[in-house]
Image (cartoon, rainbow, N blue to C red):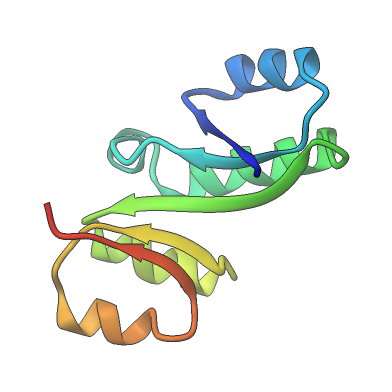
Length: 104
């Protein structure tokens, strides 16, 4: 069973990854899409994956209900996407991806 670590910011994530031995799945908090944006989240994921390749097992981008972030995450090549919106168009795009689709 893999441990999932939710990134809040790059510095905190670096400190945490430096202190653990286990391999982790990285994800972001859904609200971080709104205040950082998908490109900043992508930068953090790629930076941490390069700095800690032995500790980052996988990445799951959490786009919340943000359609633009969802489409960008797909274009950036993410295969594990958490989407909480209820758009039929978005659900159709996610066919074939490892996704978490929920309706709150």
